[in-house]
Amino acid sequence: MNLFIGGRYISKSGFLERVIDDIRGDDVHWSDKHGGGMCSKVRFKKWAGAMSPDSPEPPLITLIPQRISKTIIASLLNELEPMRTLRQMICDAKVETEDPNSIYKALIHAELWRLRHDLESLEQEMAALADKNSRASRIRTVTNIDKESASLDNAISALMRTLTEVKIVGDGPYLLHALSGYAEHLRSVRAAVNPLVAR
Image (tube, rainbow, N blue to C red; front, top):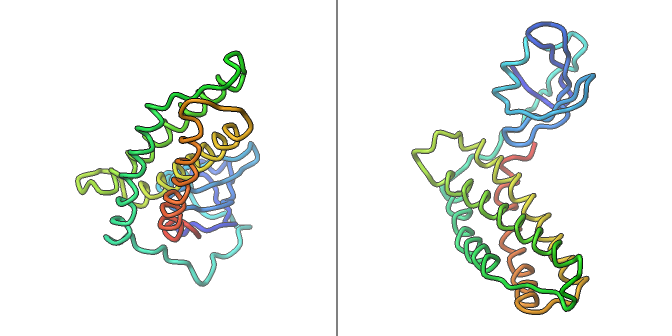
């Protein structure tokens, strides 16, 4: 079954119709009368019984995603070391506010925790891409890298915004500088992944 943006599909039971709103990598973003959701292409095809009679025709030209080459994998893996360095620096950082009772102190620590979590998730996905014995499909892994890098980008932006709004002491100024430098590495990851998942 050909999946495409704007296509209308009927469930195997015949009771529900979904419209594909977007396809990014292995993720299908859909909507129906109850709301919207997201699933993998395989899961969507298992759910769908047929195309709806009122569905538009599939496009004549379908975009073929760029192949996940060894060069692309190597360029992504080059970004692992800066990622690990940043994660370690975040774990070791002692960031405090001038006012010890400031609400920003809790916010900074929560954002540091989120950043560590997002870095770990992205590292795991990138390591899975290099693992030849991984059972996950490469496009699924690249789709996860795309999502994790977007989440990490948001986490870095939020933390940098907070650190610039507050008078920070300790490792704060050093961490702020490191985060702005790491943003370049993250842009490299996102630039390498985007042609693989864009439709």
